[in-house]
Length: 103
Image (cartoon, rainbow, N blue to C red; front, top):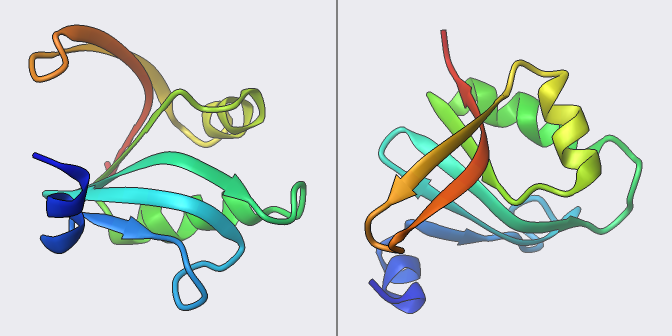
């Protein structure tokens, strides 16, 4: 499925002036969870990412973060995320990501 089609279906959400303007990038909603990928905080080291995780933990049943930055990984591992590996048939490769699942 193409990115434009995912956006049209509401599965890809861009950060903008109405949705977390403190970030650039996008997230992908799927089922009852969210993929956080390709995001950058506009004002670094202000706690924006930690606040986003708190909000998303209330809203979603799971959060996956592929290719986190060093600082994102450090924050996540202190907030009950674990490192996972998974074969993604659509990509034909194994991906690594950080995972949080609601208890």
